[in-house]
Amino acid sequence: MKKEKKIIIIGGGFKGLIAALKLSNKGHNVNIIEASKNIGGYLNSPLWNKITIDLGCHLFINEDDNSTGFILSMLKNDYMKVDVNYASFFNNKKTDNIAIPDFSSIPNATKRKIQKDLLNINRKKIEEKSLMDYYINRYGDDILPSIDSCILKSHLIKSNSLDIISKNLLPFNRIKIFPEKQSVSLKLNKGLDEIIAVKYKNLKEIKNDTKKSEFNFREYYPKKNGLKFLLNKIIERLKKSNVNLVLDNRIKSFLSENNKKYIITDKSKYEYDYLYWSAPQYLIPKTFNFEIEVEKFVHSVPYVLIYFLAPKKFVSKYTYVHNYNLSSKCFRVSIQSNYASNGVPKDLALICCEIPTCKSKRIWKNPKFYVDEIWNELLIMDLVSCKKYNNYMFFSIPSAYKLPLCGYSDILNEAIEKTKKYNLIGGKSWEYSKNDIMKKIDEDLNFLL
Ligand SMILES: Cc1cc2nc3c(=O)[nH]c(=O)nc-3n(C[C@H](O)[C@H](O)[C@H](O)COP(=O)(O)OP(=O)(O)OC[C@H]3O[C@@H](n4cnc5c(N)ncnc54)[C@H](O)[C@@H]3O)c2cc1C
Image 1 (cartoon, protein in one colour):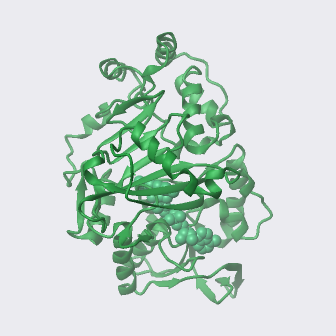
Image 2: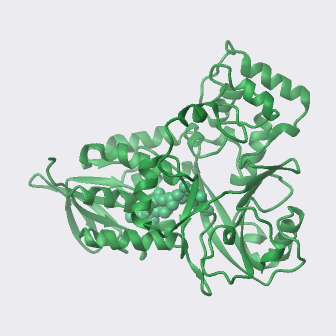
Image 3: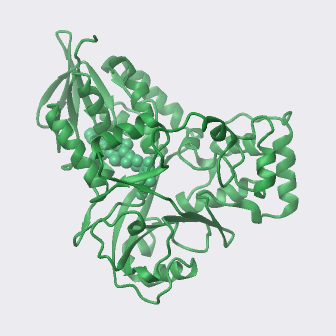
């Protein structure tokens, strides 16, 4: 039996809360220090009249039984299996059943060159200094303009400016380019299963299917009140386990005194054995007062989210679509009422449109002037079929998505090196999805769990 430790978790979003639960389940003494007045980060789904809305589309994917089992132990029976129905747009062409772009509309001559490159195992590799270099080594350079136009649409940047660790934060580790039958046969070549996307299962997944999941669904979601419902369940558990939630506290400094370590906030002082980092990674240098300017190596993308209520009978059955066409403003559209009622009146549908933008643009300053244009995009995408919506509202999120720029890893590693004396765990990685976050928590805290 390991000895109980005093652990301070910095950041009380999904990552910090799950880590706190796991640690307190093992008998450790846990404090969560959260900078804002509310615990939960993105789990704090706001209310619009009586409707709970998520900021963007937040589904849970059953990727591994451990993580799914852990979330369901809190939701109990209050979850729904979601039969996801998605599509993506690229080059004005819609492809059903994939969320990544379908590049099959690029010229045949380019496709042939890409195929030749993929099959050439002796292809010369370049030194990987940016995400662009990583993609060139992975796919050859002919697909790069297409991938870049997609990153430009969703994140307003191109791969040559991005740090290589962005590869874990963007969905281009497989590409969909060839017809389904050709893709399946190409995947039989060494290394290509991991590179070529198909609409259904990859060979590795088909092989693993003999080891069936304990859960017979792929996506799931809380039955009521969205992510907020899960948040409330987690908070109940944390309170029962005597986890201390310290809200609205800013970290001032760290202190070592008589062989004990302390964190000093603007309101109090807390002793600890280990710190667990679960706030955004790039805030590490600032929090520890290191003179390392990492924030200028972070690319932030503001998003405007416009929500519509419209008669259900005129709204399509998609769960979400990704629109990689540069000519439109919407990137992702999720029809949240197709997977959760969350207080939406029975005859209405709730649609969320995610629009990447910059702060100098008019849509950022005055989203209401663009509501009709965005509705028109929904009509063009064939997601709605009535001329007018019933109601709308919008949020402006100053940095909804962030990506590390070239040079970020080097400078961040310098900061991580300096945190060793503070017993900091968990600052070494930057994850995006809830599944990756949960796997990382287990990996980071293994010696305490
Ligand atoms: C629009 C959108 C859609 C998404 N959709 C999905 C999806 O469908 N599926 C999926 O798996 N993931 C999705 N994600 C990713 C999502 O961000 C993660 O799933 C998860 O919610 C992130 O949790 P987190 O705890 O890492 O971050 P957050 O929820 O951002 O929490 C971080 C917390 O740290 C606090 N904090 C910051 N600085 C400090 C400090 N100095 N001291 C103390 N506290 C601090 C913040 O206030 C916040 O509460 C989406 C993200 C966005 C933006």
